[in-house]
Image 1 (cartoon, rainbow, N blue to C red):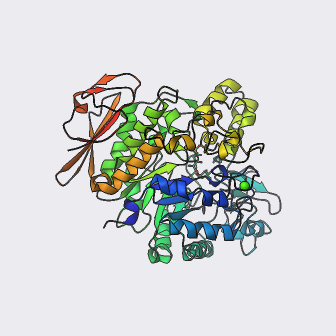
Image 2 (image 1 turned 45 degrees about the vertical axis):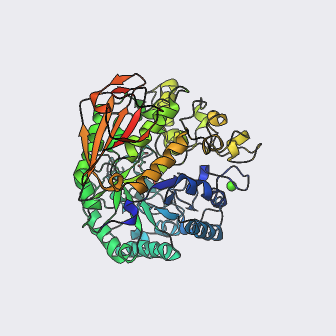
Image 3 (image 1 turned 135 degrees about the vertical axis):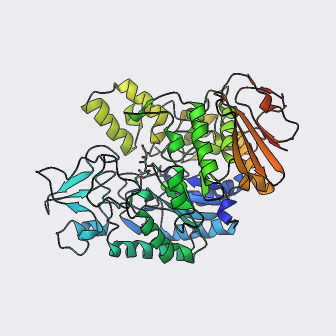
Length: 544
Ligand code: ISL
Ligand code: CA
């Protein structure tokens, strides 16, 4: 039953911001090739690449105009082949982003589809007549405005759950499904090791487009389609799949990723990342989070899935702010300790951990981004336009505070390799596509890789321990003291072994009996063990 992806740690690379090899200010495939040694040194097993396909870049590559061509900003198919080969030679697997809920409006299928109501590709997308001269319903797109766009050529609306340059594919059409499966097989035959599937639980829409104005998740046929995809494609390959599934709860995860479901290997939950968001304004108005609530959500996933399905574990990705700035403390005093603490709390749970580039360095949200012109993300720019400029619901200062706390560009500043100008991401004097976090002079890989006390060294050590102790991979999970508002303690058990993790989520010293143990201290972010006394952001992992 033990699958390779259960023992794996995944490192997510956002190619645009990882390493520029030709000094045009944009990260690229040859840049990733140059850094494979660094990724290997961290001790991970798999690289997940955000989309590298041809795209007009309305949403940084999540608007794909050709699934089988490489974005020329990132290089060529020969560069990709070389990257895959070199990664494999180092024992690193590569999984691709699969974005098949929608394409770009510049994809050949959509260019055909919009030509006429009888075009052979018309039904590759979702077209509806106007209702009383308006859009068919009141659904909103993920980046603001209606989810429907009127297309003058044929007088019908097409559905787009994201930007209007991201029309939704019609999965009811078997011809579309066949084309997607064939495309997947060609990538797998090339040797890629699996897929991260973008908003895969959105692919099935209700027949009558009812529902509230939230995009419909977990539609009526989604499991049918995923089982078909498994049967027609995935079952023939020893690969891993992870579905991005906003809105999914543990019960639904059992359907998508149950061991006997024959759909996906695991899903990304969003529940734990909802704890600091506003009911009305989402990520643009931020609230202090409740540790009790965060613990409860993540513990529910641990317990519900154990023995039935597999968890994915993540704090960060290209859509999320930096975790040390969010649930830790990114001040000079506490950044290193809190980044390590957060890493350990996550990585000692049951599931496959995902590390987002720079997380292993304790990279932070950029405090030097002071103006809306510093940002590039369509979601940020559209929300600012709507809430500040058009509707005056938030002041510029309020909105910029929200963006700084949780906008997606917090994760997209260039990787901090060195203290040199442009942090080694690109040459000095080049203007990168998005600004650097000014703290790269002190927070960078060159400082951390050789330093045994660095966040990097701590992450590497966690990867070493995972290979040594099966309990980290397979033990069950039990939350201790659920009502404790400052300390997260949990226990893992496998056969006659117990693993105890105790973490102080505050800068203040806490005293807890649970933190005293005569077990073997496997890992800690302090030099000494103070027993029941937990210093600021202290974490301890014991084996009993
Ligand atoms: O970031 C979000 C909320 O502000 C999410 O709702 C996000 O839009 C959702 O998780 C879907 O994300 C994925 O699909 C999007 C793309 O923009 C994201 O980068 C991608 O991860 C559309 O393809
Ligand atoms: Ca480049």
